[in-house]
Length: 305
Image (cartoon, rainbow, N blue to C red; front, side, top):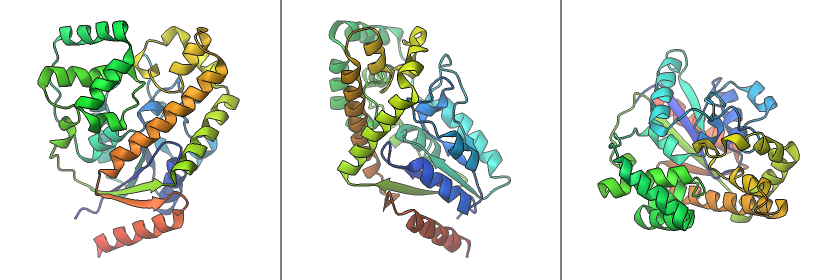
């Protein structure tokens, strides 16, 4: 068993992963690697719930707001960059925390990725034509039908990711998720997975409160400043798409807010469906910080004895 430990903290959006990661990092005198793909982008702060200045000042975070929305950045590139960082980090430290809400990105680090095949451009063109003709809902339904595992953890409002998954499915007759499931990559470190959860109503209440806080913090102004970039892949996500529709006069602000809350609650439900399939996750209530710390200390001490 390796002396190096990657502690992975997962759970539905808004549950408190950041604060738990900070508390755990303090105990083990270490740092935090973010696997939240929405928080990578410099221009997206409020709508992605990037850790506050106070939180970032307590513990050093990595892979937060480190690239621009104008850069193409995918899960394969994240795996490459994250593994390089981890290997260097473990030269000095024995424990690292990884936290975030992007299940695919977490699995890329903990289990590795298979190589994705090249896709004929005609497949994407056909999908884009269908998108414009029928709307995103038809493509969402196809993805849920053909790859329910991946759809369960995907922000289905992210048009580019839905299309990317369907590109692979239509080209290979394999599910997008199978390119993770088949991976047998051996890592040079041990992974300890911590999942935090709460009653469904508590999760939904926390999400609703978080969205209200985003609005008070200036979400509309943040999205307005990004209007010129609205077609970029990074912005095809909950919290931005709805406000773009409001700014273009399609819907009222009140309806946009209700849609953000609804779509975020749906995303949280899909996240839990994804994570619950992983038998390696050790689950705790979101308020059981000390129990998590006690468990981790015991796990790490037992592996060293």
